Length: 229
Image (tube, rainbow, N blue to C red; front, side, top):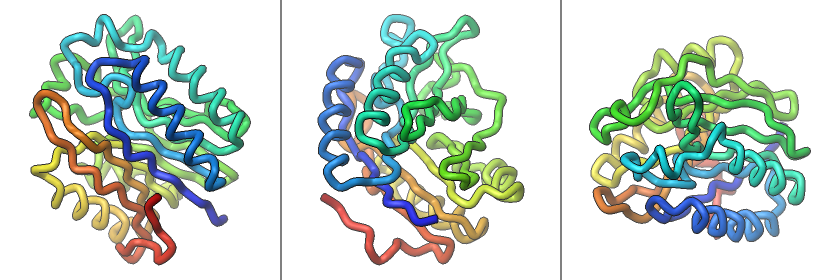
């Protein structure tokens, strides 16, 4: 299977979901002109890390975000690794990765397992308890969120059962850029898997983010035909 994959490395408007939906729609429409097979968005792209206001701005059961992504996927005919969204449920707010296929059907939801205490996630978010497996075009994949990639045994749990492509969505701060790059390369080499990592750009009131979205092959290298536009 050969896929053309597009990473949307967007700046996120802090705590402004409607502005971010509009921004994402514009970027998805632009990306569609290049006819990708898969598009991936960054972590918490609807709200950013406005954690103290999640009761107000989190998406109830991810409903609005799912409807938005399903419509975009079906309209443009590509699969969407829908980044993650602050997902307000009866059990609390989760940081949830959404996978939508090119027919506009929901494939998977994965709740971030490892919460990052340096950004106070554990005070405002609930940890997940399910795996990150999903299948697109009959290929077994796995999805993870940001801090998850610091836990090689969690990634290995998935690749040991056949996952060949690892998708990572993130809001990774600039001071730890070297870690982001090194961890993605390490996860690719040690698992002999492809790794697709998309990180947000820009800044919020407390952090500057690293960008540097990457696609890494099992040799730990960027594919020769990788480009930016």
